[in-house]
Length: 165
Image (cartoon, rainbow, N blue to C red; front, side, top):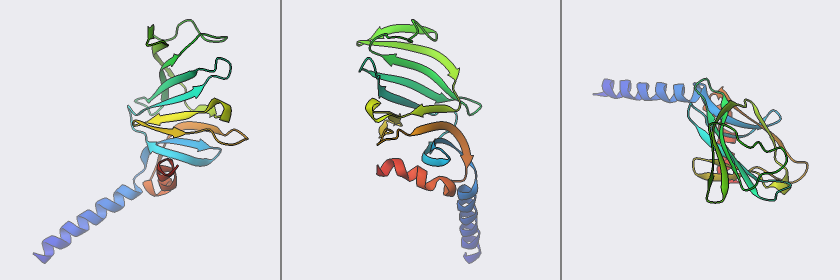
């Protein structure tokens, strides 16, 4: 029996070490070279960016997904009103839904995705049903969103940070 416990304990220890050292895909939100936030970022991972349009003063959303190759794609958007620079249609479908203009099927790679999160625009990120503030005091941060592979021990602070804010 002690030999069996040794094998089980050894196997568990090896699996734990491998899990900590294996380079997992992370949706990295970086400010310069610093990882600000990290979220699991395997294929099919989706997230939303939401902000207040600087001219229209209405909320705007863009939906993103990690593609098969690990790139970030914009899949859709929704906004309240058309303004300067807004295309009449994008993607495969444009329709009205509860007072929003919704464009879906855009499916365009935007990797890496850079966002200047000005405080006046109140930038937020939705991931797994949770909303995280991106904007903070001046100067406005410039975030770069991309999928990076790294072991969990290297991203641990960025993995925990969104849940502490």
